[in-house]
Amino acid sequence: QSVLTQPPSASGTPGQRVTISCSGSSSNIGSNSVNWYQQLPGTAPKLLIYSNNQRPSGVPDRFSGSKSGTSASLAISGLQSEDEADYYCAAWDDSLNGPRVVFGGGTKLTVL
Amino acid sequence: QLQLQESGPGLVKPSETLSLTCTVSGGSISSSSYYWGWIRQPPGKGLEWIGSISYSGSTYYNPSLKSRVTISVDTSKNQFSLKLSSVTAADTAVYYCARGRIPAASDCWGQGTLVTVSS
Image 1: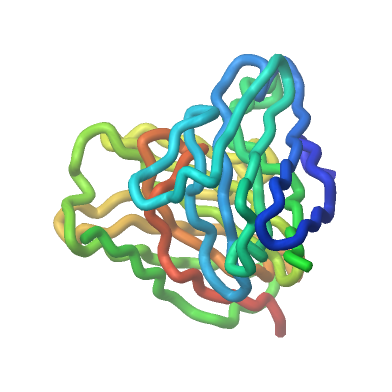
Image 2 (image 1 turned 180 degrees about the vertical axis):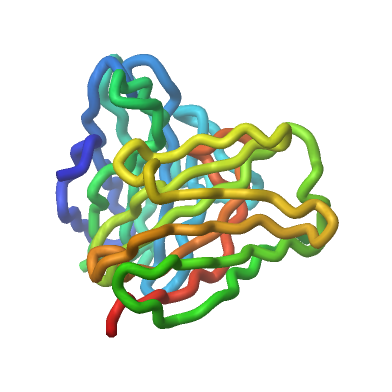
């Protein structure tokens, strides 16, 4: 059971816009920034979005992030076949049990 | 550019200690304002943060693993290390080392190394 909740799967056709949601609580998304990772098959995760909506250099502007309250979203516009991957959200969690980084369970994006 | 490379045994026996090292090249591990961390991924499953160490040497561990984890830095070798004690089959995973401005946003990752816990 992941602390952050993501849909297990999402899909779209080339050129479409797809969004992936990430739901948390006041101790994580509600009080800290959200980050998104892309993991292509058999490779290490790659930072896609940091601080809710910032793109590292080299990440296409087709990828965008947003946050509202205790939820966040990753949007991919102009979907391409190479976007087929697993996507994870992550945030710092100020849990009373001890602060930690928490991840969503991941969303497998299929480009139809 | 900065590169990270994990190294260590690929097979560890139950109840023993898993030890991995991450060698940093193309930059100094002593650079200020960075966190150096370990993340793992069991086969076919999602990501789990193990812990991070800051540029100042402060450590942050996942509460669920805290009693078994130690992360340390060797600035003379430009390396940082992970030790996970009393391992079980549940610790079988690909282990990644990574760097980030904050522990939750790692912008540079190693390729990962599979560690299997089995007798």
